[in-house]
Length: 348
Image (cartoon, rainbow, N blue to C red; front, side, top):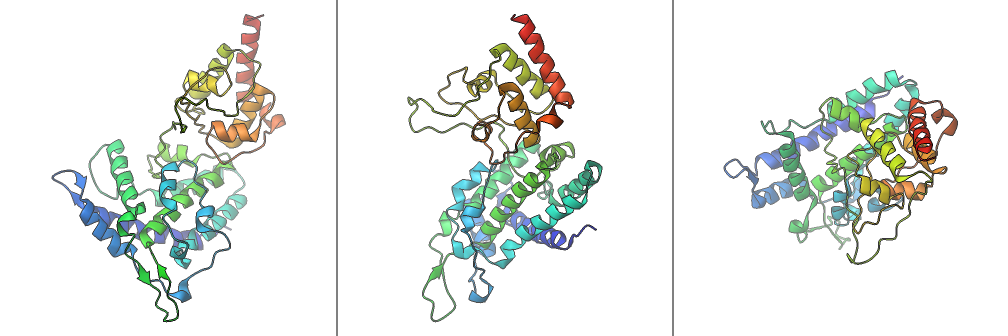
């Protein structure tokens, strides 16, 4: 039996968050200049995200709040998490953790892919707030505006001095409280964890969202530049080791791209991660399928699959060990094996 009590409660809480963000945007957006009025927006965020916390509703966490946020694709959010105080976490912001557990339990109950996908689409339906601003603008521009708004909410430097003193007479500590910011960061983390939960069942929520034109507001850029302290420094990164020729590896790359597994690949970047091309500013590779298939493909090309290299090259915290026997019965194995065989014959 599927349990949805906590899920429904969380989605209701998310509706409240979406409404608060929408009102902040609506009351701060200038239709003449098509820009957010920063001063008005600051006032709006203060009115929603600043309140004195009471000791009795505080919840002590066993681990650091910041340490619990393990963002992968949401790298831009990391710039703001250090601004969140430990004391800003209260019980209501912990609901999403319980909800994730309920969803994971439901996934274990739904044994087949045919039963899991409708469940995934139901969640996507409730999470899709792409039309909340009710604007007739192209998707890329809407995404930019929403991301711009999210940045303002997450960046609370402008209210850093607005502190609230504890209500208890015996308590002299000052607590900076940012309710709206904390709730938004928690929700972005919730979406990341939700995506990871479905990945382990070989289902890509991101792909389902794209197919149904839902917006999860994860703002993937598809390519990320690796930062270096000095442009003249050589980048020392772990690389894949393959005995196949450059030509063979590139053909496999194009095949994976055609199958919508590898997103917008670049030959130089691809070969860089196999130790074949020097690049001063390499980018990460972007995989859009299950981590199990990724590990199997890398093992197929290299003869081994090392977790550290996969995590580095594909900028991910998720790694699943290869399932060689199952993979070798798959169509993907046969297709890549055919590319390899033709390449070997051509160069023999």
